[in-house]
Image 1 (tube, rainbow, N blue to C red):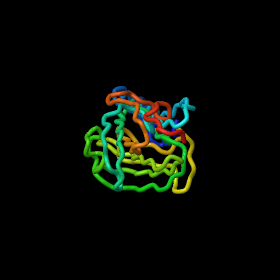
Image 2: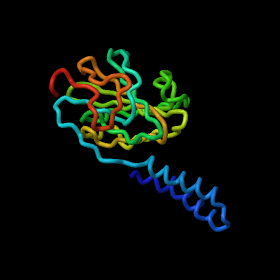
Image 3: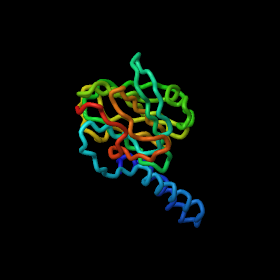
Image 4: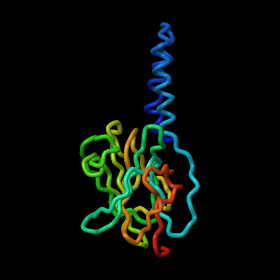
Length: 206
């Protein structure tokens, strides 16, 4: 469980317990339920990281909502978008092993994360990674409920495949931009797990 859970989960639980003193059972139940849900939301389960050479894993839990051809910084590639509901684990993991080249924060709107426009218009962190196979980019994108994107890594840091790199608070979206050399193996609508499900494979072993 992420440590932030205590900051957000304990206050409503304590307030709920205080409501029991004057006998406000309904209010107490709502507050305690809210606090317990926060602890559930901030869960951080271990994952079985694939050992397959050239694998690109999902950086997030959720459902694949888009797989489209898309240029990024003048380079052709393919974007895979994953929608995270409030019931999904919200920890993000490194889709490949490599070095964090840069983390670019972009302020923006808070459209519903399942909308296509969220990829370009919502608040987000754009994370560029240098890998033996080339550049890989993924985005932590805020949604209508999510209001904070957190990246725990900094420029120059080395990360391993599936390593925890950050989180988004409440419903959100994560995009992964893949070079043409990566063969996408997931399909739209597929449920994926961060650090465990394979999104694609490099055509040549890296």
